[in-house]
Length: 387
Image (cartoon, rainbow, N blue to C red):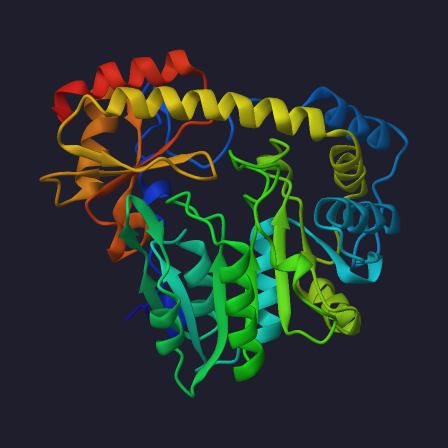
């Protein structure tokens, strides 16, 4: 009798597939798809960033690099953060990682033990809680609430969810998929609570530059000190259109350098130097690109919201940040089936709300980091399903 090839760890065996990827796997063979499902800009990485990597490759810089990242990139990221938030980080506070996702994974490995309870909010990008579940943690989700037409996180409810077994809080602000973000005062209140309870705090701030009423979103970076148990995650993917490069970073207390040096060594060793050289150029020369991109996304956001307003079944709040619209569709009870029908019948790729947890059912996420004419075509195709 052939034995089942199940993983030895139940936390791995119980993993659920990404429903967005599951939809994407239906697309081979389909043509003329309008892809509004994945969370990435439709534009290629800017030429000045690509050229930095090309020059590094041509110079033969293809060898192992320091675990924590090359010194020039770590300094550039410290300077970039200090310039935004008037902080005083140095390169010893920076860990370069092979993507923001890997930054989340190694941060969680540092902070989470098997059996720990993690408190977070929802709906949420599914990879965030799944990383904790792979490590054997229990994830408690506190739903966002709609108040006065905007999404809000009830901090009293968030804190009440923290039991004696809770060891960490996981916060994603600005948030995928809703576009909600914390205020500075709310961040300070969360930080004070974590300090009082001795909790770890992992802050996913990947979308901190995709924001529409200011240059950057509130960050825990300008509120923490070197004694806080706070790990801040960021990525090059969204702000600099570098999704496929897989380059991210962590901001850590300097005393934890050695721990993260080992975690990097035992997870991915190092990041390819040409990718890191591209990252230096991105943070040092990329501000005009970010400003132009955000203005473009804002025009697409406003156009999309204007078009959606003509459909009585749809409720959609204007996102404060990110490049997603989070639609509630009256009468829709199976968002995956809806998105599958949209793909197969209209060739528009949408992200089903259920992919972001049970709190997301009844919703659809649309990525509007694309040309307005494509959004116009998508709405026209979807019109029979939205009326």
